[in-house]
Image (cartoon, rainbow, N blue to C red; front, side):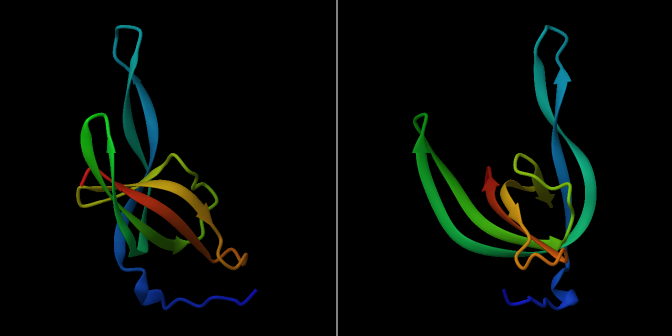
Length: 111
């Protein structure tokens, strides 16, 4: 496989990596909140717009590819956040298996 090189200046978007956190609601249930795991710089690229219909409502989604320096603690179910925008991580992979970069396929939520 061909080794990828990305200009370090391309990582200029500051983002927060967050994981879900179940917080007790005091009535035996819980509410989901998000806890910041790390602050990082990334490169964000729009890939394709899309929309789906469910529960009687239109839900707009925009799918992006977010590239960052490699981290081994990123997994699906987490989210990346930036300036009021939230991106749910669908999957994450090392594009050239060198441990330098991590590419996340994400879905923008609630925009």
